[in-house]
Image (spheres, rainbow, N blue to C red):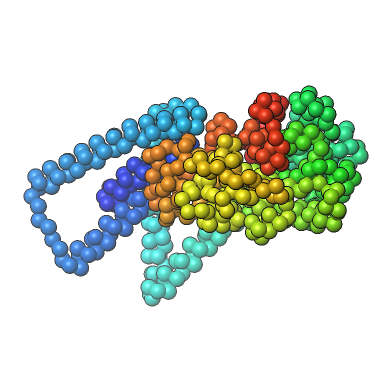
Length: 553
């Protein structure tokens, strides 16, 4: 079968290999290289095969014949193959060096030469196996058509029968394999959700959900909810770090329950807020979790330390799926859960006297940022309903985020767009850009009424991933404005999309300040959004006091 491989397809596949090795946002492991090589060469081979077939058809139609001596053909072929081999070797060496540059830029050491070499070999093996499998399937379909055509003389009817047979096979495969796999994953995730992490015990403070005084039982919170209500500082810890009197922070959480819808679940959160006296605190933050209910501890604790504990945090779980599962299979649940939670809390909060009710904030990381922003119809709606928001690593398919990016001030880069000169909404790649744009121009004083911060690293693939990359170059790549992004990164159709897709899988592995890892940046950003003046020593002390947490899950 390989002897009949398309020459034009193989040449194009080689071009696909070159593009697959070019740098992206995160230094790659061998399997990331293998995946990129496999998918890029496969598409390129298909395109090349199509070009070769069209060329043969045109030659037959036009009866074009080119006569060249055997020696000339042999010489041209050797020269061409030698040139391709030299270019391939040069591209491999150059791209490997660029990968080392990416590794240094984001502070993530990798055995680059090993990853590139083993990844290329594995990717080419996968490419070969896939081509053979496709040819085998094509042979099977041709054989099926021949068999059907013996009994059905009409070619059109025979083709229809073949198509229906293949469709039936695909349908059966989907029901047996895909659904069985999906149900198995859901079952495993549900079991994981029911577990309790080692060392976790029900809180004793009545200001925590899951405590003896709580309306939410410890068992109902789920694995992530139990982590949320048992993590964080108490009043004594806050006083020790800040040197000032502190209150016991309030943490309210509701786990996913099949017996109630999102509105009922949100009302359970509201009942807990009322029970704990949360509406008498200075600050109330609606934290939007990821698929499994995970909430960024850095964000919650930062607010608790900065406010001296005079705050309350409210969140709820909307799915058993982790971030990846929800991202791929269920983007409606994050939206519906966030809309229910915020609307229930906001409707009650808006009935309270403006002079005595807490300031209302909202926040989310990654998929939590996507869901949290879905609680609002537009940025103006968000501004009218909250006193502030902190959105971290917002996925690029978030509607409000996309609208802000598209309507940014002329001349401001996509990685940190300027919106209305930063009066209310400010984008930043790191905390140093809180008070000025990417080019260093100072913002006017931040609004005292509402402050909304969008934080996104130039090297965060979660923010920059988009299906549009398959066919069009994104602004952030064309502008080359990211400080921790390789300047040689270039867009190529199809390949760039899969490169950034692979980058997402390890986006949280770089140290804080790069990729999808924000950690201690929450402290100065929340201080600015809350309007709390802190010197550098206080911010550093708070950052050191917050334990490192796991990545979004």
